[in-house]
Structure formats: structure tokens, C-alpha cells
Length: 111
Length: 115
Image (tube, rainbow over all chains, first blue to last red; front, side, top):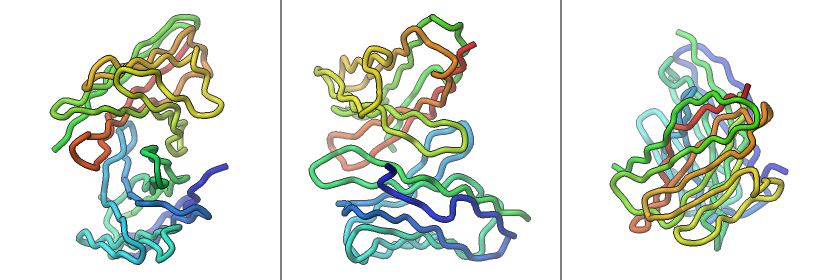
């Protein structure tokens, strides 16, 4: 059973479009991280959210942590081909240091 | 920033042989390191948690005799895939947690192919 479900699983869009990726769970997380992974590489951290309801912005990327700390979203404005990659959410449960990854969203942005 | 070096990046081995993968934290100390496995077009699945100076903790379904983990120092953890079979072919990624800060840093992964 996957603790963190991401949707959509695949997303193929044109340059300039907006998109939102969702990360949902029935469990509460003390913090949640978003990563981007290129083929053949390890994941690279984009952001960490800790407080329920928290919103963080990183240029064209906006991250939100749900009020109940069970879900998160990543919104990309005006997507560019350089945004192409595998986006992964990862959560930390209370009293553990194990980072559990979501199912992943593969994004392809066409010029 | 924190850097984790993982070697080798790619290895091909014959069925029945063993392969060792190294994970080093280059500029920070890591009391805890994590090993993940990733199948093509899938997410990362946690295999085990490695603590310096103690036995690794394996996730359910991961064979501890197949995947030997050693964390001998604060900067080095190794994963040895013993008696490898083609079904062990995968992308293995390590991660290290900085004892001073909250962050997790990932290695660049090892592509293992067993023929």
C-alpha cells in the first residue's frame, strides 16, 4: 500500500500552460518535501513544507501543504520544456526519520 | 551545499556474483543513511535505514541476506547485493541525513544490470 498517492501519474502539456500536481494521503505527516528527478539521476529537493496551510513559492512553482498535513499540491505556472521530469512528493511521519515517497508524476512539456 | 557521492554509477555483473555500492557524504556527517530502489518509470521504494555503528533496519519484504548494508563510519554506507539475479536489476539510490541540519541529500544513483 502506497502511503502517498500522486495525481496525475502522467502529464503532457504545451509550453506556457499551467498545471497542478496533487499528493494525497490518509496519514498525517510532520513535513512534506517535493523533489524533481531527471532520468539516471537522484532526486533533487525543491521545497520542504512543515506547517499545515503553508504556501511556498519558488519562481514559477507554488507549493501548498494541506491544513491537516495529509496532502500537498505543486502548481507550475507557464510551464517550460526545462520543467520536464519526474516530480515526487515525500513525507515524514511523526517520530520517524524515514522519508516515504509518493507514486510520482511524470511531466513532459513540449515546446 | 551538502553532497552525497554514490559509486559506481553503472555496473553490469553476471548472475550469481555480488556487487558493492558505496554511498559517501562528502562534506557533512550522516548518522543515518537510507537505501532506495527504483524500477523503471516508478517511484523510489525505501529498502533499509542504515545507522552508523549498528545494524540496518530493513523494510518489510526486503531480504536482509540478499542486500547487505554496512555503515562503518559517519560518512560511508555500503550496500552489497549478494548472489545477484536478473530480477535484482534496478536503479539503487542512497540518501544521507545531515546530523546538523534537517535536510536529506541524495546520491546520483547506481544502475545495476545483472546478466
